[in-house]
Image 1 (tube, rainbow, N blue to C red):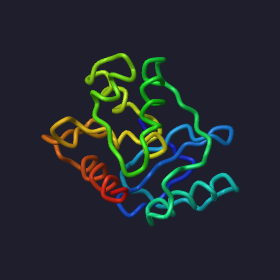
Image 2 (tube, rainbow, N blue to C red):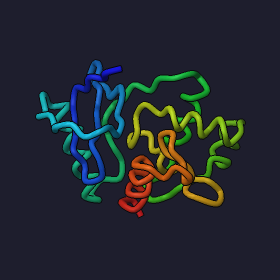
Image 3 (tube, rainbow, N blue to C red):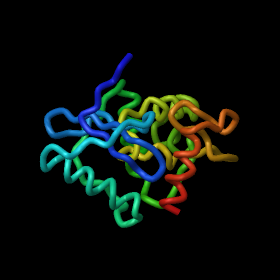
Length: 156
C-alpha cells in the first residue's frame, strides 16, 4: 500500500516520513529514501527545525503536538515510554511493570508506535541486549536496528 507523507525529512541516519493532521503529528516513521519536501507552513518549518536540532545533538525534548493513536493498551504503554528521558533507557520489563503488563506486549506496542522519535521507543531495550526496533531485532539486524543504534549513539 502506498503511503503519502505530508513531509519528508532527510536525517543523517535515514529518511523520515511525517503525516500531519490538524497541526498535530499523526505519524512519524523512518522510511525508504524519498526526496526531502520543502516545508509548507510554520508547523512544518518548526518540526523540521526541531528534527534538525535533534540530529545535531542540540535538542533533547521535542515540543510539537502529536496525535497518539492505537488501542487503549498501546496508548498506555506509549505514554509511559514518552516519559523516558533523553540519554537514558529502560527495559521492556521496566515499562511492563509500570503498565501492569509483560515485556512481550510492551515490545509489540513499541513495534506499532506510529510516532517514532517523538515517542522514543528506541530508548526501550532488552535486559541483556539492545532489543528490537520497528519489527526488527538483534538477530535480524537490518536497517531499523542501525537506526535504533544510531539514535542511542546520538543521545549517548
